Length: 115
Image 1: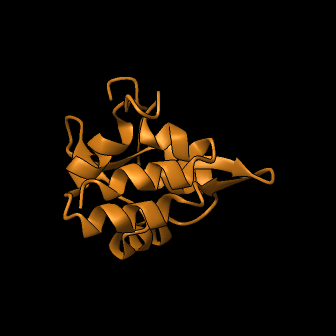
Image 2: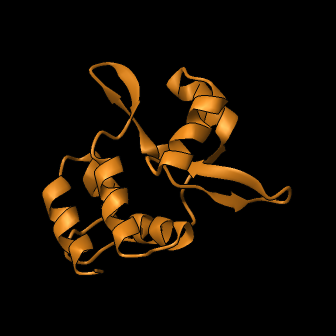
């Protein structure tokens, strides 16, 4: 997790082309997860939650469903982010990297073992 680029809610919103309020709403809805980090203890998200979809910066399309599954497993936001960002032996990469590469089913199969 040490090589993860963490960005604040306003920076995340800027990259997506939306308002910070919209990002906070996505956090409240469980479509995104965040942690408090840094010396000022600000809410931050991994920049890797954003990818280009048809040339437009977007949240990884399969992220919300995966977060729902992890929430069903009663993982905290901290534990969810740790799981998403830590390399998995079976995947050969982190679950987040696997989602970015289109391996939704494989990631969710592994996540179901946490239930």
